Image (cartoon, rainbow, N blue to C red; front, top):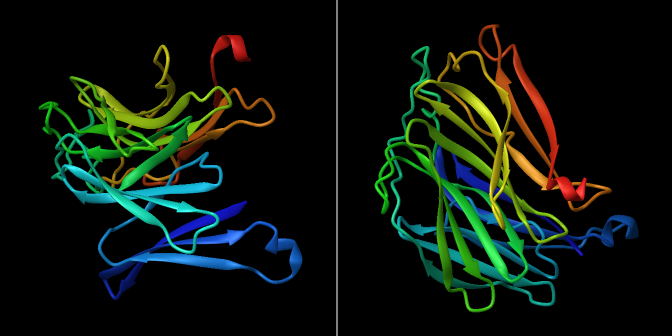
Length: 265
């Protein structure tokens, strides 16, 4: 029943707070917007989970081995929160070199990029530099799978590759309570490549489009999103992009991928 928005608040170049704002959907047609907010001066870049129903769940890092997970019921004025311990990970430096010598992760950071609820589980995803508890050889995506009732960690999941880096993962849930992902893999012998996948049940990842070069300005990220598809809500739709044979950002080529289990198409 709510639209949720998040923002990071700065004074000059100094971060001061992060906010979640919720607006009643019914107020868009009533003529008077009805909104409330939750502000944190301790937790940077709050990420609200998709598919939350009547309780919004959002999170941010509390440390390199814990998350602060907030629960905000529609009937409550303020959220509650819990600390959830996760496997340790590295906040940088992020580095991955494409075949043409570009560090496509130069602007990467550890803020949460994907969040969704699947049944009674919360999934939160972020990018880690190489290393972490599992000593991954390249930057990777770490996912915390959490019980939404007890706030206990169920599993630490890594999206990783022995030869390339993985980063910028978005998450969402379909009508079958499966978790879909949209992310980029690159470095080593690979130029940045958009990948979509299903992470629950029998996992499956598929390449959509591959770049033919690395970014001249050593920047990547943003615009990698996945959502439940409509009208067939058993499928996912995901956005990504690639760089082709031009220069700079002039040939950044966006793509939309609709995907799911073959039996649900």
